[in-house]
Length: 531
Ligand SMILES: Nc1ncnc2c1ncn2[C@@H]1O[C@H](COP(=O)(O)OP(=O)(O)OP(=O)(O)O)[C@@H](O)[C@H]1O
Ligand SMILES: [Mg+2]
Image (cartoon, rainbow, N blue to C red; front, side, top):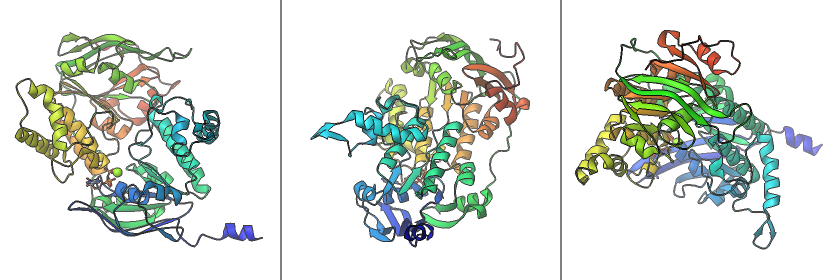
């Protein structure tokens, strides 16, 4: 039985082997002689601090960076990856940190981009494409519409489309760069199932993530990079959380989940919200409103957390407060005691409301411009009223932003798009701070940020609170939420179910209130926050 022996025989060559890979951008060496080996059927986690070189290494394998030193072997055969096409031919697909789908094109058009199904010369057979796309997407538990543009899908669904695209290209090596950073817990679980199934089918998977919990449940092997160097590779069972962190940062690191928060004194109210609501654009019998009856007050210096599961209305609440849903939202909002009307984000900015969203690209980082230029754009509205920003001021601002936030860059002129993912996120926050807001709305502010840099963001949030800003924080990471918040409002299916004080914080309590049909019911009157 030839076939059986073939099957049981372990493949003699790794699916992917990278040897002595080095890479410099200008004078900066970002990869130094790195070896990396990936076996068929293996889920291999690649970890390291922001800027360690993870994305760069994997982009080289995917042919996205044409100049590099070193050798790449796929199933024992040497390849030069000079273009994405070379990588595709070698069976390598990469889902990048920032998704790379074409927003205007439909799901099927994205999946078959470059390999369209044609009816006759030049005529694309959409019907067949939609059908074929459905066959790939269905097992992935995709619920969106295949013939509609990508832009209309949630990030989680877009991720599934990226995977479908890789599957259609028959990738045997799948590289995923922080695939879950924008996903809810449920969506992540679903993605893990997909990844495990692919691995069982023999696909080799390289998986970049900052989330230790994921790596523990998912990975077979863990490799750690630091400052562009390979620190080590080991089976997951031998890699304790503590050991991984030590390898990442090069020293013992106290994780920053001890809090020094004191009880809230009476604070001057900065943001007051009464009866906020948002209609559901696609109403169902169960749910005509995405947000309703949401009332709260955030005082100067307070960090007000909002907890909830996917679809609880957390992001939507922040969006309404930023003037993003003028026609379909309602409720009363006061800032510093003044009643405000928001018909668009410009109104919101004018009264000092800033929103840091989970989407760096949409958030208006100009990726093709330097840190200095991005900093300048952020202050333009505030300063320009009094005159132009001089190049010197611009540079000073950029340097201050880099310094304040610990952005790792070669200098203020480095292009935003070439910063590592985590450092881009810091720049987004820094950019908003330059506009000196009164109310800071943070939506998943530490997404994609490594443990060390998270500590810096936490400190930053603390400092901003001390300066008297009112901060509203949405994060899916419960330890982060309970660490930073003074109070937490729990939402469930768009409605508030609890308002917790620090001594009431516990993960169990929050999840209980956040789950539909949870056994705990809010005490009546607790939700009405006095103005
Ligand atoms: N095109 C480029 N030009 C200049 N520098 C670059 C470019 N691409 C990456 N870098 C630099 O290379 C270093 C490694 O970046 P890389 O994106 O690989 O980090 P990473 O490990 O993926 O980090 P993160 O966890 O933040 O995503 C960073 O210092 C980054 O600023
Ligand atoms: Mg990266």
